[in-house]
Image 1: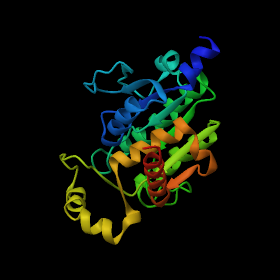
Image 2: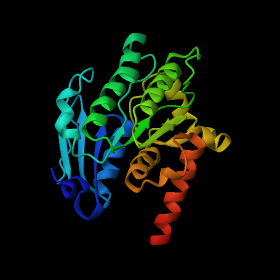
Image 3: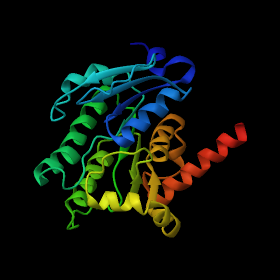
Length: 242
């Protein structure tokens, strides 16, 4: 692969989206496919996303405990948007740690070895605790994953910590808490605007930051307030162009 091949056409980026069958990952995939600055999108996941698009290549990878087989695919990527994850309470704690920490570290290891200069956009969560002292497993494991990514040596790493992610489209909520939050979302958003973010808006900034590299001016950690500010900046920019 030549340098010009790696750079893409006319400065366009080649992105890999991990976890596109999930809510945020699905929006990230759609936005990347629509983005003129993106030449090609590779979706890597454990199940098919059922989408066909000229810019899209889909790779099914069942076991993220070993991503060695992805090395050749990842060698051609400029950036990764990593949205693979699961909900607290939906799996045993050991599985939660494996999915949240081990899978992230293993994928990052192979990406870093295959494309050392790739940018990495990671879906973390509000309350992620890099100190490991939190009583909440989700917070500890997201913090552990963040620490590993920061230590991996990527030149551009972006860690997104959204609070409540509003699904936008109707879905089967994973538990009672999510059903309640969806029901009271309008009031919750009005009272606590910095504690909510739309799934599509979150996905858009996760993709945009690795395409435009605008996040180099801040970060590497983006809390919910920061994410909302990025959404507003993107909307203002789009309005100015229009």
